[in-house]
Each structure stands twice: as C-alpha cells, then as structure tokens.
Length: 79
Image (cartoon, rainbow, N blue to C red; front, side):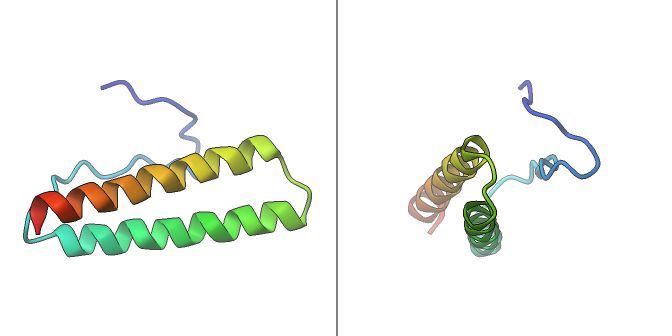
C-alpha cells in the first residue's frame, strides 16, 4: 500500500499504526479515533478564526469523515 502525503517532522501527517483492530482493542481504537476527530475539529475552528486555507480545512473535514467511518465500521464488525 503506497502512502500519500508529506511525512515531515512537524507536518501533522504522522504514519499511523497498522495494528489490526480486534474485539479486545476496538474500544481503544474508537477512543483514539474520537480524540483525533476532536483535535481536527479544533484545528478547523482555529483555521477559520485566523484566515487559514480553505483547502486545509477541507482536508481536515475529509479526514474527520474517514475517522467517523472507521468508528462506525469497527463498532459493527467487532462488537
């Protein structure tokens, strides 16, 4: 699987863990995704207040949708 994006020291695009989701760790994965969503929402709010790029805010919104989909999928499959 080819990863896309910039993975510099402070880019905010850290490579994510490839730990498989199981019935025993699904709750931890959901908490992690929820925390990430919370961070992205705060980032969007900050960007909106400080006139930052709409392109970056749209990318954050897409990422939130992906994380929410992960939570939904994992909760159906592993609970």
